[in-house]
Image (cartoon, rainbow, N blue to C red):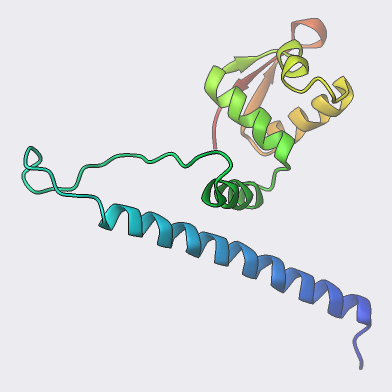
Length: 139
């Protein structure tokens, strides 16, 4: 039985997507390993390497790659990942805070995004209507 071109395209697309994710994870691991292995030893630490968290520039290729890999792993779009980051930093946000964060998006779209984050167990919704707020619960 011959496969249809549609099924072949879907399988190819899936394989390429997974390959991209694995390649991104590999590159991040490789870059991180190179940075930590080139960290100088300090006398104060008894010859142990300093543990510094290096934050890449937001526009650097590494930062862009990390962002793309994180979004694919979490299964969130860019806006949802941005909202999740803010909720994580603040702990609790209201719909009004979200509207200020993303003013070009309708309140209904923001509610849908928050429903996705709640379904994935990143946040919990407390209250209803005007007393609604969202709390970061992690995952």
